[in-house]
Image 1: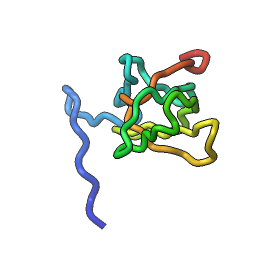
Image 2 (image 1 turned 30 degrees about the vertical axis):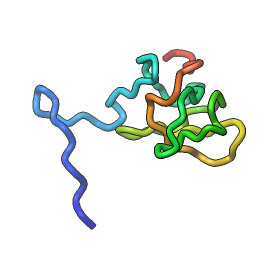
Image 3 (image 1 turned 45 degrees about the vertical axis):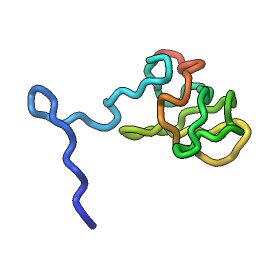
Image 4 (image 1 turned 135 degrees about the vertical axis):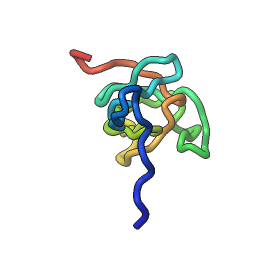
Length: 94
């Protein structure tokens, strides 16, 4: 198995953990875990199907470039690019 690619260093030479890389929605809002989101654009190549347009769901995971959403109308987890969703409601304390 190949080694994972190196992560980008910060100004002081340390590495940024993936969870600290900010992901922002279509409006530039931070996307926290457990927030309510709505799919606002269609991009079938990136998992944003027309059937989910304006559907709401909950963010249950994230990586450096993807947000993992469980939509109310489905039982599976869908990986979406952050610019295809809008944060509707963040968890309390965020």
